[in-house]
Image (cartoon, rainbow, N blue to C red):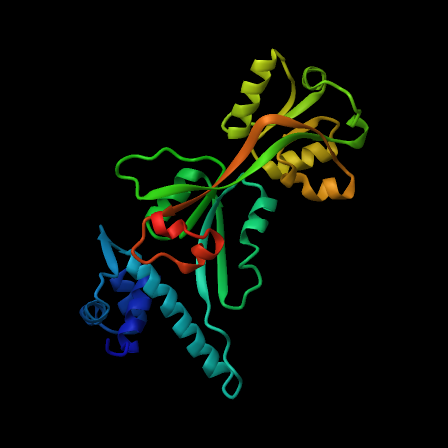
Length: 295
């Protein structure tokens, strides 16, 4: 392949950032037709379309998103060279864009991203949101990966696949004074106030099935959809929290909370959702080996 024409790349970069030919042309002080011609030349050289047209908007294709990542690096390093002439340039970085369900355990996320945290060659972008919005971003190539604790329903047109990456046990946790040996689980569940995930949670589904099997009517002190808030409530109140121990890892280590009982056959599942890509982000493989082979 011939060397990249950086003039073409600069025009592409401007359009990708503006999302509109008119604004990009104004920014570059050239005509729209000149911008369009330069992008067409770059697409022919790369062998891939870089934009799809949605009404008046230009939306990046998968190849366009990859090209933008490289263009960002190229022009960032160029600016750095101008500003630090005579000093060594920085290490070129690869970007990984991940969407995480807003209610997902922060402790779990930190553990998952640990292999990439602090690396000079990696820029990690994490966005929180509701699952439906995150999946739309994944399909539009604006995210490389989505983390969730539920496996979303798929259809014949779905381009993404949920991959089970972890299972965490779920326990009753509370203040140390609740830790009395020999108490039966049914007695604890029927007498102690409980902090539960909301009914949309997979943990809550499993918990409701458990108490139904045991014939127990639990005392519900609160229903909370955010694990970070459930963690705080368990720490500040006298109710028992129904959570994976990883959520309250620091409190367990410090003795602020203790694990009262492990709940039988109850787990929280974690999924990495990846779309089928011709050009998968190689950083995904470092987090979940093999995920790109069958995404």
